[in-house]
Image 1 (cartoon, rainbow, N blue to C red):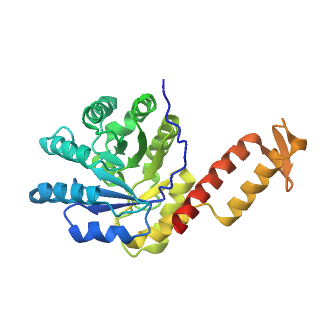
Image 2 (image 1 turned 90 degrees about the vertical axis):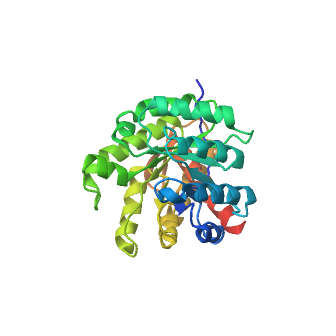
Image 3 (image 1 turned 120 degrees about the vertical axis):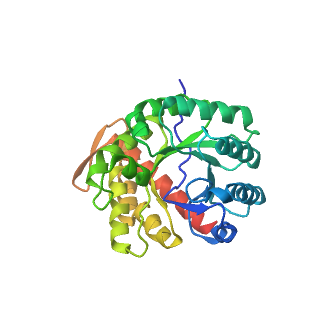
Length: 300
């Protein structure tokens, strides 16, 4: 069994959907302060523009110029001819990842992994998993098992809360009470698989306080970032899912305490009057690794 623990922390605080049929948007994305871009061939593209979107997205990926931004392409369902054609084209373009929609269970994950293994041109395109159907939530554990055992990179689960709202008839408005069990089920599944988990989109533009509250809720639930529908949401997502100065300072103190020679071998210490365990030092190291990766991105 192979578990894909992330050897290097990669910030995915802000993950912006960009319609593949909009050439201007694809170009503008090169200047946005976003961690990852999802070039969408599915929901954001009208049926008559599907082929145009595929051609534009693959050309944009091949031409590059996106700097540190992680490039992910969301294909149409692999159960459709469109999705199969998307996968062929995306495998040739070699983005960082491919996001697969409408997963219903572990068999779908195995199918995608098999297709990628046959088509991948050597870059090891990472698989991103769209958790947006009742089946994907019900079988989150089994999907995570496939991701955990995969012999190729699996990067993240992405929550598709709009589709879940449609299929379940649960209210998506703040504070998303009905969604909390499903969100947490996916968080636990992703952690079991050793991959990231990205929260669903917020559908309003301009409701800054409500959007910020939902970002904070997502982070408190254990999410690594949030999918976005508009560039105006990027700054708040980046701030919400980044470690604060206070957290970085505290993590440094805990790490320094456990690293001190006189504390070698100890599992519990008192730092600034608080009892901390070795696991808090491990959590602190990851937090500082994330902060370092974000800082490198800013200065790069």
